[in-house]
Length: 358
Ligand SMILES: [Zn+2]
Image (cartoon, rainbow, N blue to C red; front, side, top):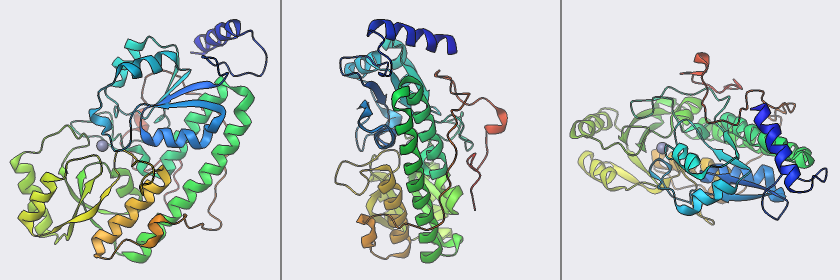
């Protein structure tokens, strides 16, 4: 990869006159062209790369990343890109073909690199792809993005790294907000009974001690169609555990959840969790930070029968003394290829590499 990267830089320098300090970018703007797959990655990249790059998204708000159908524009954008950000862990099963068809020379960044993956299931044997549901994982995603951008655009590397530290602080605040919300509103983890729409919340469940009862679609992949037996098993669990509410997701059809709720005499929570995607601008899930906080508020409201707190639309609570500033260090394993974490010790773990689970 090092040779290929050097070659790319040499070619790009040759192509644009080689004035020192300018980003090795394609197009006429002089800015790096960065393509990001999911709405979460688009938002995170916007926060840490800012206006130093031209950012193009593939998925749109409320779209299901498991089932996306790439367009001709996607092929063209990836062909022209300097950097392509993907969430990884097979979330975007359509990406390998898209990248191959584009013939791109971009650095492909698998943003899951370095993250300790939860065990997957039959549909997701590589691991649980919903890595953004632990803010400690999101820090690593941010770091992977900043590292790749700093290599391609060294003139703006210091800005990217400053932005990373600032965003990490917000992730710490988010984590504190969530822990505090559960501890004060539903102190007993057994009472935090979650029936979700699909198995998207595993990292959140592990980190914050949620009692996961089951999902309407009992799979990490929304393409799975639940059988009559799957539904019967979930309905039994709902009755046995005296669950009060079922949650639906913004990117999924709520019909089956409504049927299960009606069969079992429980309610479908009014409001939708943001699972695989952000919501549109102006919605409570319009940014990554807001999405995770809103999900927390909505889960607590649904489980307690209380209305959503007004804080759902207010700035995040700032907690003192929780910031961890890591020195900047590019990950040596950032290969720019399509591979996933292959170290066996990184598989099947429950906590992120940061290990700050307390
Ligand atoms: Zn999903």
